[in-house]
Image (cartoon, rainbow, N blue to C red; front, side):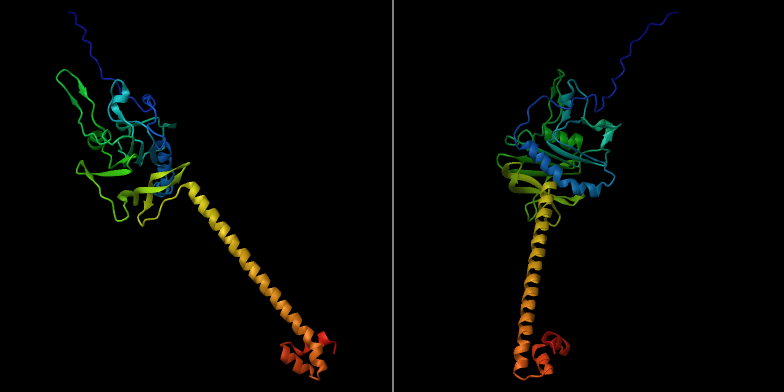
Length: 296
């Protein structure tokens, strides 16, 4: 008796971060995007070092977060302009991440921020993933993916053209729009910091930037800003010490001039018939000093 061979199509194994594309081939949307990402990363570094002394966290800048496996792979990913994931190792099997795979690490980003070049419509798109009867897949909107699938705890959309910032917090599996505090900032409670807008110059661009503040409203500085402040403090301290020394030198010089004038007065007073003791008392010298100076 012969048995017919049945062909079984086994599911393809899930790809890892080294097998998925780390770019989608599109251009960066605007010249602010890159320095804005660096500014957020640089200034939050000290906070994350305190929170993660073991170094276990990841920051992505325009990097893919893969939430499903598709063909082509890019259709199953979103690439926030900036995002932070807590409690994940900086390396995977000794390699730097090329992308972030939810099915591989299973920890959602705490924060994701999009820098919208347009009016924010794409970044706030709530269109759900769906498949029609003829197997046509509807591309889901970013907002829906971050909220329903990736489950990013804090999602921000910064509309560069208007300077408008919208922040959302995931509560009971859905986003609730956040409202700024009295400083105009949005509290990221797990980190104890605030996100807000700051007008100033960074990397040769003067405009509105997204910046971090601590919970007391103190701006978190970049490394170069911290060095500039330390340099200014050192220069101020040096100037203060030099001024103090100059004052001391002037005072010492004045005292020496005064002492010399008193010494010069000794012979004149003795010539008037005053005793050595009287001269010493008058000029605030000891009797021995008067005798030594006058030679008596």
